[in-house]
Image 1: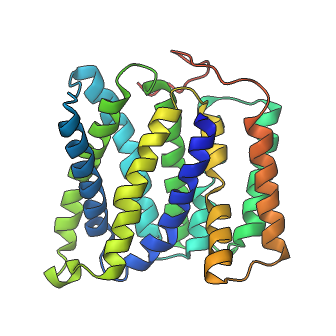
Image 2 (image 1 turned 135 degrees about the vertical axis):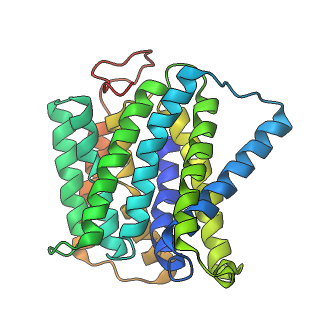
Image 3 (image 1 turned 30 degrees about the vertical axis):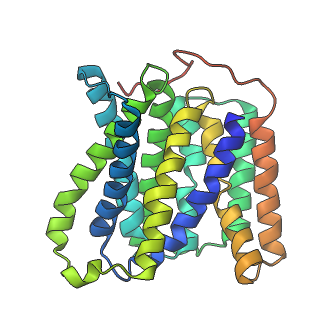
Length: 289
């Protein structure tokens, strides 16, 4: 059930790439990110207030939240800024390199992990068909992949130390706060915040649905190893391509079908076999705090 829930979240993650790429024509990166995370934070705090849920606030919780938020901040900023200079396809492929970074950070070198990761990368290459030449946007997305890989790795450890809800909320609060100076530097004209259909739809996808998907990820990482989480997330461009083919009539050639098939095989290979068990301190966890 946790792995199936994570598969469903990839539908949302996949939709954020084209949505964010489009909305950057209206708003600069940090201004959009502030709106996105502020909306998610307000919604989550509203739900917790209605439920009467109190948040844990102590030194250890703030330390874990700060470390996780640093990786989350770096991931989203480098990805969003990078999207201004590269294609959504290149961004999707390079970001998915966290499928390699996660087991590296965790020092997990099992044959099944690396065969699965290799198949996933090959599938991503065929599906996305990124350009070979690198630009500054691609390099920023490579930094994004490393940051998201580190975030996935550290969440495996932190979500098993107690109050996952508090860890989730404090990350939203911290990331929103540290994005604000970037928006101030950008100083966008007020007219650029006009509630256009594009902005409203994008905020619904990224601020509402993606925040819910992040909550699901936090829950799942209490019981699912981080390398499996990263591997399942490689389905993002597969879902994006299939949805665009089905609903928008976009062309998906034989290479694209081959790539998506390889990714499916990789996910099935990497997420089956050894049973998933809950542990308080997983073997090989990164020393991140």
